[in-house]
Every structure is written in C-alpha cells, then in structure tokens.
Amino acid sequence: MFSLLVAAAGWYYMFYSSAAQRLAGIENQAVNQKRVRLRRLGGCSMIMLAIAFYVGCDALNRHDLGLFSGMMLAVLALMALTLVLALIDLRLTGKLRRSRRGND
Image (cartoon, rainbow, N blue to C red; front, side):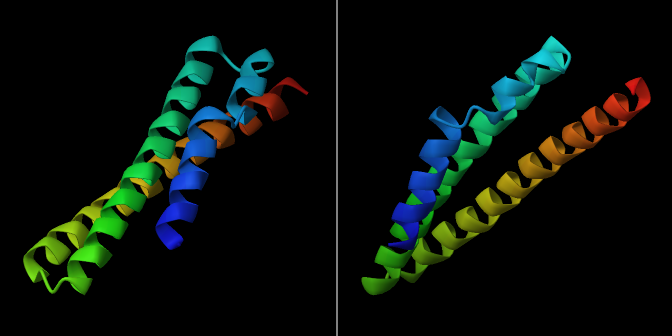
C-alpha cells in the first residue's frame, strides 16, 4: 500500500503538478525550465522509489536476502536523490524570494 501511495504521489508530481509552470511569469525562463525539469525528475525518482520498495519487500517475503539488501540500498539512494532534488528546488525558491524582495 505504501508503494502505491508513493508511486501515485510521484505520478501526480510528474504530470499534474503545475506549480512550477505558474512561476514562469515572475521567474527567469531558464531557471523556470530547470525547476520544471527538477520536479519531473523528482516525480520519476519517487516512482522508482516505490518500485524498489515493493520489490524489496516482496524479496523479503520470499526470503531472498540478497535481492532485499540490494533493493533497500536502491531505496536509500533514491530517497537521497529525491531529497537532493527537493533541496535544489528549495534553494531556487529562496533565490526567487530574495530577488522579489529586492524588486519591491
């Protein structure tokens, strides 16, 4: 169930979230395109995270500890990737806020 929820959130974030595109009017075009690509990559990493978690849990149920260990390492790496992408997006948002305050 957890994997399904994570995959659904990643799918939404990848295809239906339009928050980054709405910033196009107040943000540099190149920076906005970077933000949109980062968010789509984040959604893709969430979907891959859900798949890896499901495969790892299924491997544990089948007592395949080698596959379980590999999948949990993949889960850890994908969680780290998702976190790094979110932090980059947060940094871009901070820059946007500082530039907007400077213009006011």
